[in-house]
Every structure is written in structure tokens, then in C-alpha cells.
Length: 43
Image (cartoon, rainbow, N blue to C red; front, top):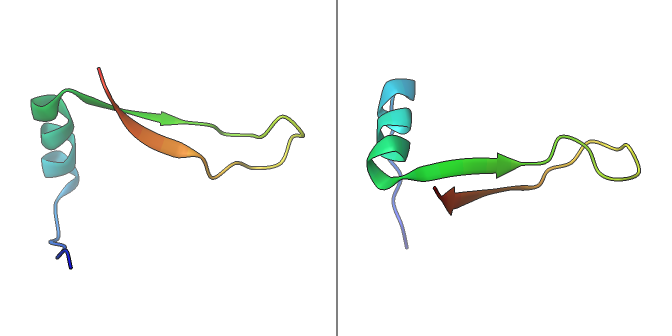
């Protein structure tokens, strides 16, 4: 089981920079509906 900890927004973005990550997301599906797709990828 994993545990979670609270982070500030600055800590979140610092982790992205430190780990070389980017957030890829889709705003809308092809049919125009809102999308919930996202993933973290290496930059």
C-alpha cells in the first residue's frame, strides 16, 4: 500500500523539473466531449 503526503504547488513543480517530467493531457475527445485523459512522460 502506498502513502500520500501533502505538497505545495511549488514542491509539485520542483519534482517535475527535478525528475524531467511533463504532463500530457487531452482537453476534448474527438467527439467534442470533455476528456479525462492524462499521463506523466519523460521530457
